[in-house]
Length: 371
Image (tube, rainbow, N blue to C red; front, top):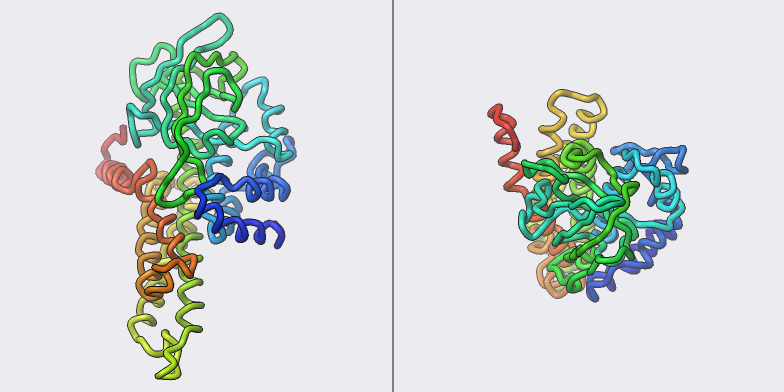
């Protein structure tokens, strides 16, 4: 990572948010830096970084542009599925990613199953050379911009909603249509739009899991990487908001009192302290989650479920506090805090939502089946 990369992300962030455009220049800068292959195996030319390094990088990106961080997070999740596959095309696909020639993403959520991303309602059908996909995908990050879509569909002869298969669909494949432009409250540059897939013929070598093995890949590959990445984005947003709040309240002065906002208002100092504690507590939870994964602890999945919920709710509170103590300067968009405030809203409603994660954790704690 270089200062040049960070400079591009900062320069592009305001325009990305204001115009709601996919951050092409920022993604190109990531590709140039080699970060698109950060977590991929060394034999493919990747850096073979683990989740901890991935988390650190994702947070650093998010402090500068949360939209770019979300695109990067979804790219890594898709790339991990491809890396774990036995597809004959695997090595070629990974080389394209590592060399910065391909961005990946996930196409899991569907209109029919809403935020239950693990339960597609679309079903693949056989043809003479592979399968045909017909899906209505919703909230696909980098829709229309990603080169590789990791697409889920019910397995050919499935009887349960958890019997799915994952396929690779390329950007220009026949039958892939991108819906209306994304116009979200926050994360306005991540192009999280719908994709319609109609009569899309997928060759046999583009199947990324065993037949019916999609759910296993979602739970064992995608979920941990996504949860860690999402938590890192939330912490990055919170850190950015906190830094802006400290800088503003420590610099701007009450001229008639000849003191800064922080010096003159005890409530500001109190909120700054609470923000710092909240961020550090969430970071500690993330660290404990990473250690539980690294050490293969029996309770690792419980932490995986909790980490996104804990950090998402923390970011909501911290960005709200920053808006309050910076007042009109934040509300009037003089500071990036207003963008942080909007960007932070996404994680709590993004599948798996905070409420769903709480329910999953409750089931796990009570010894109940999650599905």
